[in-house]
Image 1: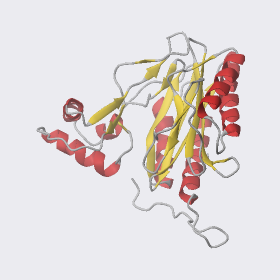
Image 2: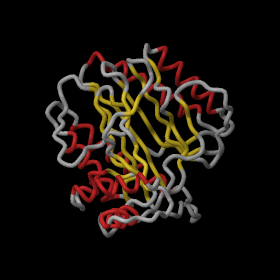
Image 3: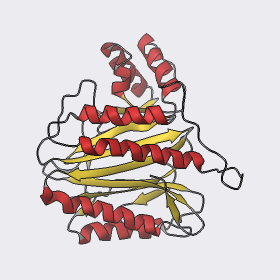
Image 4: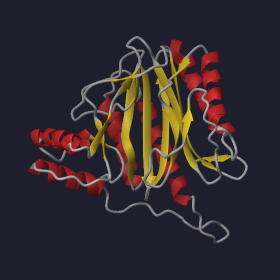
Length: 311
């Protein structure tokens, strides 16, 4: 992590404190990071090269990443980030999704896009873009989140695809990646309202499959829970010292720890902390093997009459 972070203007043109300055700056950093990723998406490129380029930009221009860069191929919907020395490369015709987040002193941005290297799959990408853009237009004080979910579902199904039922947009808070309120990709009964001054990550997922996902083995992303537990293993204390100082409340990649710790110590630390209930894994989420999944995401601040997109 660089020692010096960019200065963020906290005063607006009227000389008043701008409470949204850091949120906006986080959005700029995420947008720039994805712009770095887009031209790298081509056959033969290592996924790890894209992930490192995106994470480096965020770490150089923000307080840090809000989560490890997700880079998902084809039927993988979410939570894949590269392990250390990942040799996976993009192939001809792949559908590639990049999802990244930055934070400025805990003020978060979250954004994603998909690229179809096979022209036959561009309609799938367009479906998630259209659904996300429609949801953003609907985000205003008093809007019902279940109604927005129904519109997302209808948009994706009218394009000939299925929304991913188990994934949703989510409210953001300072140092809180997933807040209390959710923006579903499907209709529902809970009539939770949008309120002025809230921040949301609006994300939609369109699938050529059933719209259902399942967990894959070998997670690459973890998150510490804000609890203290007794630990016995020396490597676990080393793990905690690094994770609490550098990643705080945010999810982190096993790869990041693998660059700092011995492999055996890292694995034993993960095992002990999971057994003690202090560490959770964010499992890789996938549709059926023959399916393809696209994602599109932006962060918005809810204003008096609508919303402001930061990413």
